[in-house]
Each structure stands twice: as structure tokens, then as C-alpha cells.
Image 1 (cartoon, helix red, strand yellow):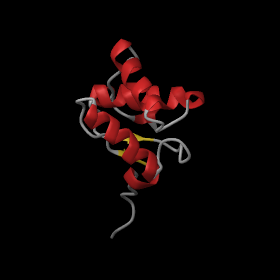
Image 2 (image 1 turned 90 degrees about the vertical axis):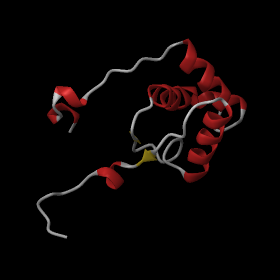
Image 3 (image 1 turned 180 degrees about the vertical axis):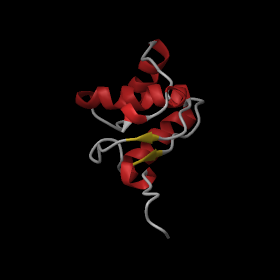
Image 4 (image 1 turned 90 degrees about the horizontal axis):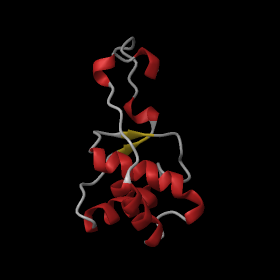
Length: 99
């Protein structure tokens, strides 16, 4: 699906010191364990980049209501906005069907 998106719809974002610090806050506040640091980094990069929506199939560590609340609580305490986190099924539309 990503390969079919127009280039104007894509922005590259990067992990840096700021996102690493926010990811560490997610781990410190036990939103995810240190073993899942990569997931916390993913959330932190998206938060700092202020993406519209983070879409993931990772229901265990990301698209999970308790974790979404945890990530957003840490984000707000750290001075960042809340992050919209959804599954692909929540954002995908099939324009071929009439509603």
C-alpha cells in the first residue's frame, strides 16, 4: 500500500536524541518494558513528528487501549500532544462499496 502512495503524501521522520528521551520516559513509566524499547521509539518518533495517525498491526504493544492511554499520558506529561493510534482496519476504506 505504501508503495502506491504519491510521494507528496510521504514524510521521512528520524529517531534522534529527543525521541530517545521520550521513548525512555515510556519505558520508565512502564508503558512498555525495556525489551520493547523499539516500540517506544516508534511511538516517540511519531509523537515528536506530530503525525496525523500512527497505523500499526502491533496489537500487543502499540494498538492496545491500555498502552495508548499510557503513551499519551507520558506524552502529555512530557509536553507533547496526544498521538492518534489506530489499526489499519480503522483507517482503510474500500471506495468500491456504497455505504
